Length: 467
Ligand code: SF4
Image (tube, rainbow, N blue to C red; front, side, top):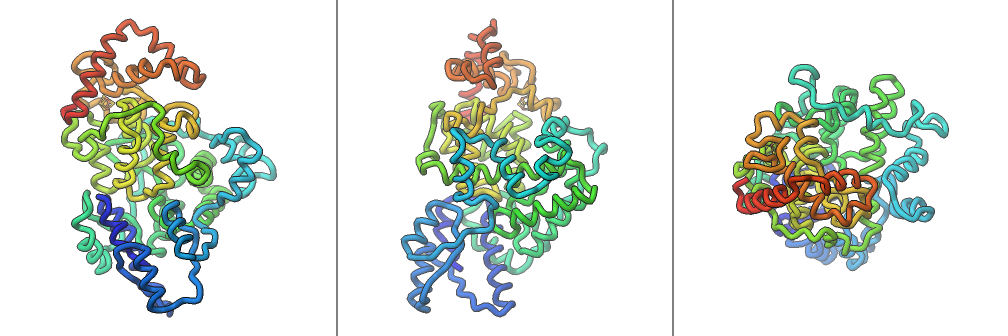
C-alpha cells in the first residue's frame, strides 16, 4: 500500500476527507497484518515512487490491482505494467454500459436506471417494477417538516484512536475545516455498523423528505454512506441487497426503497459511466461561458448575508458533507445562475466534500449542476430562485433578503440571478421544452431592465464578498 504525499499535499483538502482516506488505509493495513498478511505500507512522495521502491526491494514476479477509479491512476498503473482486474465498487462496468449505450442515440438516466433495475433484479416482480411503477419521486418531495414532527435518528460516531490522532497530525498543514469527530467510518466494521443503522432506523423515513433542507437538523434520514461506499468500505451490491430484503419484509415503504435504490444503482452508476464514456476534455467544458472566479463566500461563510448559503457552507466546513439538494439546488444553483467558472467550482467541491472523487465531481458539477456540457448529462439547467429554496427549506424566514423580490436592496440574490440567468441565456433555453415556459415568462417581465441592473449589483457584491 502506498500513501502518496503528493496526493495529500498537492491540494487543500477538507481535513475530514484527508483523514477518511488515510486513516482507512492505515487501519486496513493493520487489519490485514492481524489476519496474517504481509503488508508493505509505504509513505512515499508519489504512488509511482512507492511502487518502484517496493519492486526494487521485493522483485515481485507480477503485480495485480483492482482497476482504480480515475483516469490518471489507471494510466499510471498501465505505465508501470500492473495487471488490472475489474473492481466490485460499481455494479455496471463500462463494458456493461457499452451494451446499454449501443442501442441508444443519447443516454437518459431514467432509461439507464430501468435497465439496471431489470438487469440486477432489484425491486422487480417478474418483468414489472414493484408496486407497478418505476418512479416514486412525486411522493418524495415533501416540504420540510416542522421541528419535533419527525424523529431523525442521530448518526453513529466512532471513538477516535491512535491511528486517527496520527493522521490528523500528519495532514494538519495541508487541510482546512473542522477536525474529525468519528462521524465517517474508517474501517469495514464501522461502515457495516452505519449500514445497519441506516437500514433499521432511517431508511423508512428517507423517501418523503429526501429533498428537504432544515436548519435545525443537518442529516435528516439520509444514509451518509457515500464516503464509505466511494472508498470501498461498503459495496453497492450489499447495500442494495439490504434495501431489497427490508422492503420485502415490509419494513420500509416502496417510496423510500425506490428513492434510495435510484441513488445507488441509478445516479451513482450513471455518473460513473459518463465519466468513462466522455473524453478527458469533458472536464474543461464551459458551454455557458461562465467566467466568474470562485467567490469568497465558498471559503468564508461568515461573509454572507444569504442565510441558506451561510448555513450550508458552515455545514460543509463542519463535516465535509451536505446532502444532494443543498449541493445541487443551493451551492450548484448559485454557481450556475451567477456564472461561476465550472472548473473552479468543480475543484472547490472536490476538495471540500468527504465523498468526492474526480469521477463523481466532474460529471455532477460540469454536467448536472452547471450545464457546462451543454446538456449531455442533464436535460435542463437546474436553475431556481428563492421560491424553490423557500418551499424546500426553513432558511428564508430569518434571512436578511426577501425571497419574493427580484429587484431592490432586499431582493433575494437567488431570485434576481434566476431571472437574469433566463434572460442572459434566453436564445439557448427557449428551445428547451423543459425550461421554455420559464424563459418565456422572463421575456415578458416588465421590470427586466431593473432585474439586469440589480443582477449586476448582486454579482459585484458576490465577487467582493459583501453579499
Ligand atoms: Fe437564500 Fe434568498 Fe431564502 Fe435568503 S431569501 S435564505 S438568500 S433563498
